[in-house]
Length: 330
Ligand code: LMR
Image (cartoon, rainbow, N blue to C red; front, side):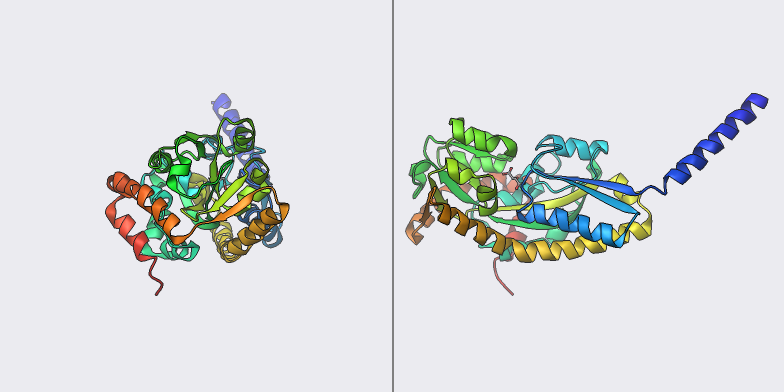
């Protein structure tokens, strides 16, 4: 009996102590793989700033850029294990958890980043944020980076130019198929390995938005960059569902509100940031920037578009149709 009472007392003490410890700030580790100067890097830093101003002493945000804590592949695992609380992977990196997000990788689907934005705000786009909740992943927001450009050490003007080249791709089966469609050899590789991969010739080409090209100095190891705008590289800001739902309701709603503000700012500024990076690449004179004629572009579309049919079953034709509908500005 005494033993039981002593144990109960110890338990009560432990609970009391952990109650006191809860006065410590909630720590949100936000890990990502790009530079601070990119749209995602800027977004993560602004989120930290606003949270720490408005939830002073209650929530602390630690930002780890440039794969300094976890790289691709590992960051998702870390989120599920509770080792980080927020990440924002590219929409190309969710294939293991849902096939529907592959819609964002379909080549030449979106006319421009405004169409991508309209789709993300549509009912279907919002539903996709919840498509991984069974896997304990909650989508909180979409952040833009921008449209992707092809690069290589030889000029890429028509699909034939890409034939036989080894292209680095993100971990996406659609992107893999996209390069196979032009008879190139795709190779899945984590972002942190790309510079060296290009430098050593493990891969000869890549596809990236301007902000990633410039901030990772890919232009130093790619002689030609084709302004193809053939696809989008955007992000989903995600959290661990159990962590998020376990937060005190008032804190969660303030974090939601702050994230909404940050999202608006990131998405309003991403285009300009990419244009600035493009200009910096041009000024660096490391690479020639190739503009496609309408005829050349049409050839890329013709070669790559069959990929849509290949993935229609997995993605769902309703999702593809909703994305296409976003090309028509209201
Ligand atoms: C990539 O792997 O190319 C991108 O997903 C990196 C990023 O987060 O922008």
